[in-house]
Image 1: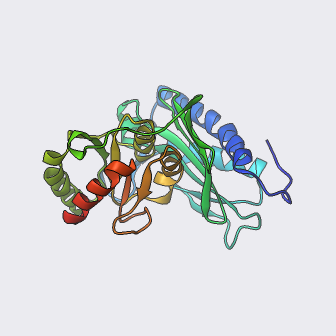
Image 2 (image 1 turned 90 degrees about the vertical axis):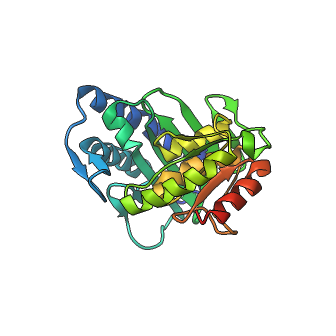
Amino acid sequence: MSLNPSERPTPADLLAIALEVVRPAAEQVRRLRAEAVGEVSAKSTDTDVVTAADREVERQLVAGLRQRRPHDLLLGEEYGAAGGGPSPTGVRWVIDPIDGTVNYLYGIPFYAVSVAAEVDGQVVAGVVLNAATGQEWTATLGGGAWRQGRRLRGSSETRLSHALVGTGFAYHPERRAQQARVVAELIPQVRDIRRLGAAALDLCLAAEGVLDAYFERWLQPWDLAAGALIAREAGLTVAGLSGAPPGEEMVLAAPPALFGPLHDRLAALRA
């Protein structure tokens, strides 16, 4: 799908383009995993890995988006920003070629391709596709969140003590130690905690109600752009702490009944 550059794309238009590039990218992820993981190198620390597949799949996503929307800006995990200055179209794509790289390396079937479209700085369309299983979550601003034809509405749980809460850990040892302290203090207050290893998919599971809530610190824009929209459109509150927007300092996604109690507990723990 391609649009006239002079036309203002709708969220549905941008979602259609995202799906066109995400699905073959997920096929490529599966193919590369079946053949061999390939070259492995470190990113920020020795435990934060990036594979040749990350780079190859990001190149594929960028090429597909450039073909369809040559004047838009792009932000990708492996290659950073493509194109400088303000977007002449108002559109920027935020892409993560493989969210959950460690799962990918170890063959754990929980890793995804994530693509979101921003218009004038606001995310209006997003798709997260679990490349291992084919499960696909989508959302458009004001259009709801969906998984393959089923509308998502989050969890109906209202008691923090009965909530299954997802989280994740950074790769820097000092940050992990701080996050482990928070989890150790929080776990007696909830039903249980899950660490699944892919933030975009965690947000989708919260949108679906498989997880009752989710929080994590030190996420990057490509980790949360599509997943956060999906969670919001499922009716979850997605924010940081103390009125801050979601971002590197904190992302908390929960139904309104759980958001306040979980927020207050995390704030008390200086999460």
